[in-house]
Image (cartoon, rainbow, N blue to C red; front, side):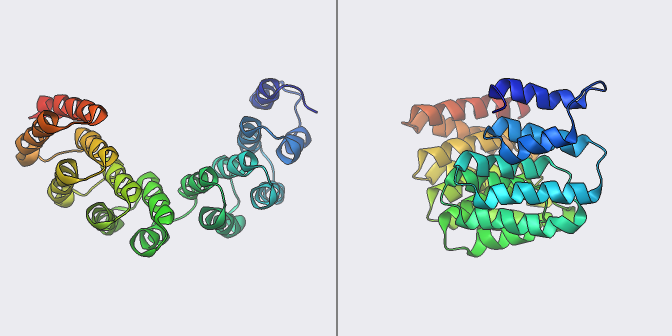
Length: 268
């Protein structure tokens, strides 16, 4: 209907140019009818950059929500979540958008849509609901997506210790390896308060040493390489990575240990 996806994508981007003849109506048509993920996201971003009224924005949000909630094509549902994350959603519509994204996170039959919804929620909401899901939800995939979301939040300083505690608990106690791995990765990215860094380093070293899953061990090595390790712990971290390198049987874990050893060794 609109030609090749790549051409449609570039025609959408062209709307940001001063002399573009692409209209809001044309972008809306792409948003409502296009079946290419890249085009949908570009159309939402372009519309978000235009000077349009809040009622027009609300109408666009309603279009994206309808595609998110009703489209049978998983790539369209996934694209609608990404589009909602980049669009300037009016304040009055944010609650409905959050509810729609949470429904996809909890109920969508496709894991890729669930992960996209978890990532999109980081643009709209506060971490408390995800902390509760991480701590209490019986569904391992919900705990996994909660950890992924928490890593993406710009969490206010007063809330950071409770998030760190929740991630550490999952890292140390969760029976599901994907949740432990997500918690490890989240702690590697999260702005951990200085007072909690020593404890987090100890927890990451323990996962590197004892976890039965090689992906978790590898992620722990990578997290230690990125983490702001306190000066008093650096020698112990380098020793832990070297010890893992010497005893590890899985090649990609050894590779992560080598990388981490090199980075941490340069700081020690």
